[in-house]
Image (cartoon, rainbow, N blue to C red; front, side, top):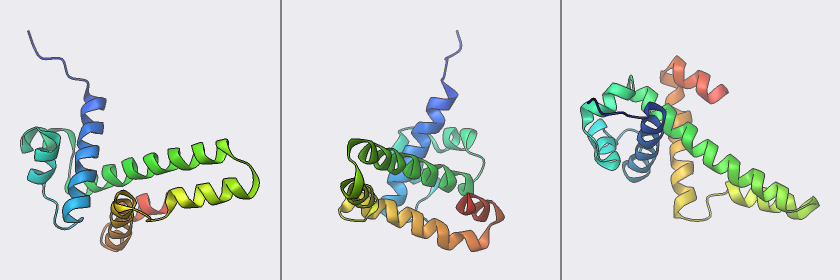
Length: 125
């Protein structure tokens, strides 16, 4: 019987793995093998789900953005007025190692957007 795979979940796992690999090695240092090792799958499996390295970076940046946006929205809903503004801004600032990792991805992705129409479009969105 063929193995049933949730393709959307697998893509999400790969995006998370790409995010972790990029946090560790940077956008230009992270390889497909690094991402595969983080996801605990083969490099071939990564390439089956992701069409290019650009696509992987886009998925990682989108994962990071989605994660932080959720935190910011929760902070906004839990407070009002100036307290809400402070909490929302704090959720986006590079105040710890995890957030520095998010900023590393965002800044590298924005920098590399000059080289790729796909990245430029994603950055614009």
